[in-house]
Image (cartoon, rainbow, N blue to C red; front, top):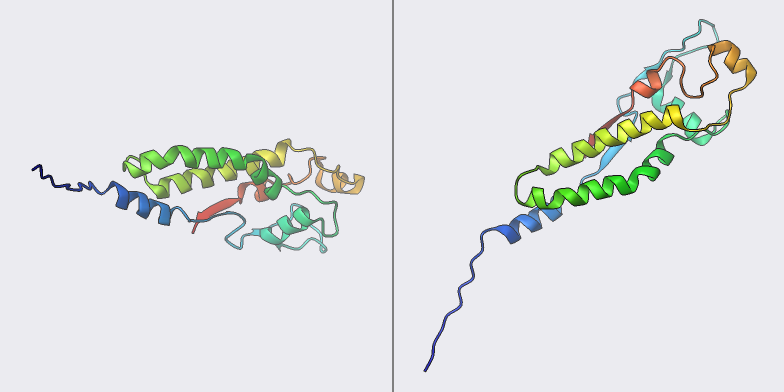
Length: 156
């Protein structure tokens, strides 16, 4: 008669995979998150400060000005890049050579840089002659640089 016993050895890998998968549902918010205000570059009674998130929404949605979306198209164009990066980090995260938080932070930094680049390289509807005269430039979305520099992210 032959007798045997089976022992299951678990080095915690399965638990780490489960834990990582549960934590992989974080969300990265990118845009104008802190309530910063845009300070007009012109001195006029009509020029009042406006929240950067409101100014961005005006351009994204075309509220009273030609539609010049820059956040959504940039994120959409780079979505595969973010997913590919996240996918490459799964094994290092499971092996504890990379933290999940660092992965999310890196993707946030990438997204901010991509939006900022898109703002200066995309072909937007040209500005009106009166706008060019007022701001001294024909580049849409770039006036003082406040809007471009204020884009940020947070991981939730």
